[in-house]
Image (cartoon, rainbow, N blue to C red):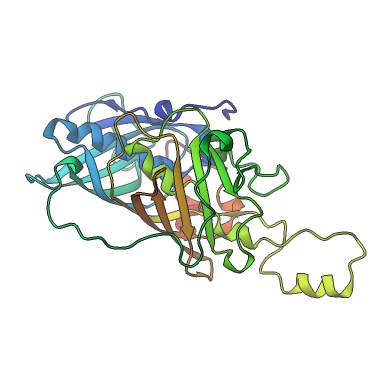
Amino acid sequence: MTETHLVPFFEATRVQKLGSHAYSVNLADTFCIGTVPNGGYVASCLLEAVRIHSAPSGQKDVMNAHFQFLSRTEAGPAVIFIEDIKRGRQLSTLHATLYQGGLLDKAPWFTPGSTRKPISAYLTMTDLSKEQGVSLPVPFNLDHPLPPPPKPNFTALKENLDRNWERFTVPRASPLGSMRCLQNCIYYAPRGGQAAKHKHVIDKWVRLASGEKFTASSLGYVADCWPYVVEAYRPPPPSNNQESVSEQSRHEHDPFPHDAKFWYPTVVLNLEVKKALPEEGVEWLQLRIHSKQVKKGRLDLEVIVLDEDGELVALSNHVNLIVGSERNTAGRSSHSHAAAKEWSRI
């Protein structure tokens, strides 16, 4: 049954300990794109599990994570199993796997030959508050290839009154209008839109629609909350039934039909955390999303995450595919490998 109400992010990523290395989570329908949970959201569920797993050892912070999406997940229960690959005084390496389908209510928690493994991840854990060593004043800002508008007045921005930024609303008629996952964040874009010659670069300020604050575990979702560079190139619909010759010529050169519906499944997501967020979290984060090439149905994304003060919080790089939305909504089964068939054909 499709959920239409907003599920707080804390609830949607709530992890329960089942054993020394096993954890359970229920993937929320409201974080789905079509029938598939957003990849970054599922990554955040794994981040929360490894945080709980590593906290007793004093290494609750993820320094680097590599998520490999092996098949598509589905809303509903999942089990996360964590393996301690290497335990060190400063850095430790974990392997986390998410299981779905054929789950059991006791150890070993899954059914060999029936349970699927949609996501596997390697994570480097540390305590960011204890980092020491050489620091250099390496200059960094978002001015290349273009500067974003000035930092907003956040009080005014909440009322949509900031001079340079405005709330971004997805039109219902847009192919993105049916993506429930987008309701979980409130997005703000530059007034007047992005520069036309830099459509491959997107700037956003985001906050959680539930009123919660972003924490370290939410960074997986933040890094994947706007993988929609392709949408910036979407052609406008025909103005009327009697198109001029110039309009017809323009549409002939459009990269795809104006009403084409796409799904952008994540194949690989890498996340490097540069700064520990406070335990209580932060309300606002800034995103710079940049694609270097969109070619033959494959899309790269570089995502830069900064805090209110412009300090670097995280870097993320993705490999995404561009496929028809029908791949997303094909029939599913919670108790067999059928749920992964469409993905395996990609």
